[in-house]
Length: 259
Ligand SMILES: *[C@@H]1O[C@H](CO)[C@@H](O)[C@H](O)[C@H]1NC(C)=O
Image 1 (tube, rainbow, N blue to C red):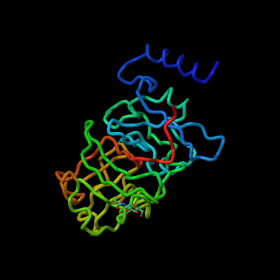
Image 2: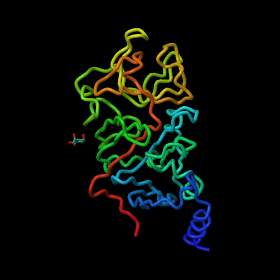
Image 3: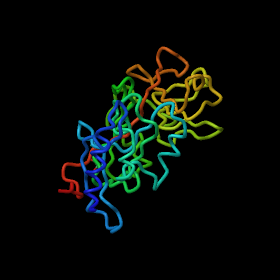
Image 4: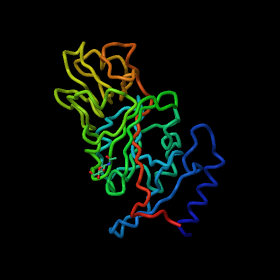
């Protein structure tokens, strides 16, 4: 049987087992072939394309355990291979699905990051299916770890993000002294009660109260305001359900969608 035959057979099987969390094969998605890749062994990637035309490359789910950062840098582990795509809950392939994703989705795109073809990289946090805050970065010439930086920041829903200083603005964030503050946009540390910032993915709590009692972890803490917040000020800070990284390719990328 051809690979195509297997594909069709699985679609039929999964289509009958539908439910709110049915597997992904019935999801519409665009199959794209990376013709720029010289490695003959590399197969066509089954990218997840969202409604706005962007491509989902990472999607962390609040409360599902594990470290967001460890998962992000797990080169070689991805959830968009043909076999993975048959079994993954389709909630993992959307950013607005609330309860149906049981993992942190990682695309193979992170392993080869075609930076010349990447226009923008968007970091978004979602609550109740809606994007509540975002920051967008220039992806051209970046690598998969360094696109999140102040010098690459293009726009954000937080109006003061461009003009304020930061002690952290990176994916790696602050991993010192048993802190697991990743995907961290921090303004400054001023003693736990006065620490200020915009966004953080916490894989566990640490010495500061503002990181505690918000689990299960990971917890995605963000300023609800249009500006940064004091983490300790409960009303100004909220937790998100999903943290997603999406990319927009340039209009004429050197790779081509398969026929
Ligand atoms: C993004 O970065 C590239 C490479 O440094 C640069 O040529 C381009 O002008 C930047 N785009 C924007 C919108 O700043």
